[in-house]
Image (cartoon, rainbow, N blue to C red; front, side):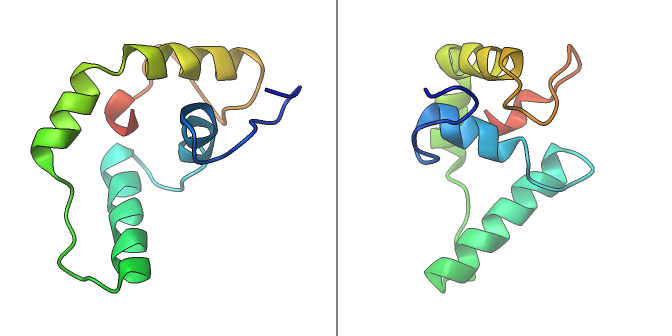
Amino acid sequence: MEPGIPFNPLINTGAIAISSLIAGEDSTEQIARIVTFFREIADNPSLEINADVYKSESDTAHRNRSLAYFTAGVHLLGKLSQEFDWSLF
């Protein structure tokens, strides 16, 4: 990682930094915006999140959570607090 800039927004650190910038009042609204975006670019209005994959990724996301704290520590995340909603990770 270069100072203040993730190498690639499609890898974990970059994706975490980008997800912190998604507009929305809460994670439900942010996830809805993400799904809407992917539906549009895939031209597939029925595209949905696979609940089993989401749960598996969420249950094993310890490294991603540590990366989120790290990127917050070097001021790459918009916000991160003890009350942070981990639904996006």
